[in-house]
Amino acid sequence: MIRPLLLILALTFAAPAVAQRAPLVLAAASLQEGMNAAADAWAKQGHPRPVVSFAASSALARQVEAGGAADLFVSADQQWMDELAARRLIVTGSRVTFLGNRLVVVADRNDRVRIPLRPATALARVLSRGPLAMADAPVPAGRYGEAALRALGVWSAVAPHVVRGDSVRAALTLVERGAAPLGIVYATDARAAPGVRIAGVFPEASHPPITYPVARLTASRNPEGERFRRFLVSGAGKAIFARYGFAPR
Figure 1 (cartoon, helix red, strand yellow):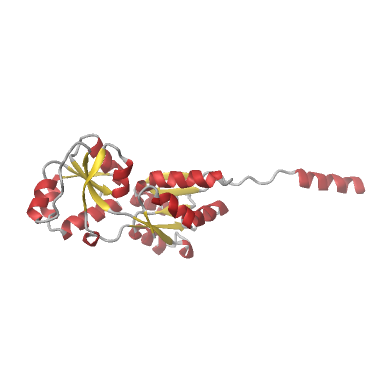
Figure 2: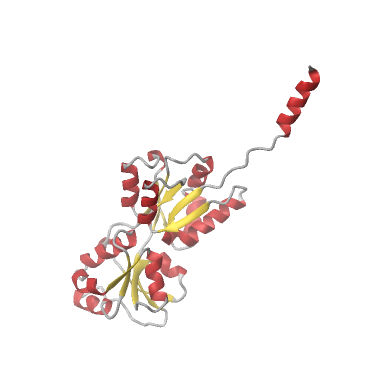
């Protein structure tokens, strides 16, 4: 009787611990550099490196609505997070707004153009000198951009010249490749692209506040997802994003 008991105990203590599973994070396209740096920092602490999928917030939210499996959702606006909350797809108490951004006009780094915010006729003339790259209308950056142009009284004049990308990074790429002389993106996008420069900054009052909420998805069963969420909204996590131009909230 003693030998079988000892064998059972030996097998129990010799069994390897269940390996932690990397969390899957759905993150807005504009977060690429900061989120990858945060994932690397988290991995250096002994955790499995989060798997991050980047796309427009609208596309990621629709993926969640369609039943796509993930642990965290990080949006570039409140609207898409609100939609998931209304469908009870996020854990309400886990939602935290932790970053902010600015909306800018970018041009090729060798283009000396300056964006005059006043008068409206001058602004419309500069923005209409060629295709104006913007994110699609459902994408947060696209909605922020349209709101700003409407607030400044130039949307009707500029709209016929707008070319759309499926994310803010796609709009940035149009400027980088010379397909559009100007584009409306986030300040952090401009910072991440050495081939462009900021030609103008929109007044913050001209559009809704640009904020980034993170939340755990109700379908998540991975404890590492919640641990990484807490790291992102911690002082250490926010400091990583601040290095890439985001404003901690």
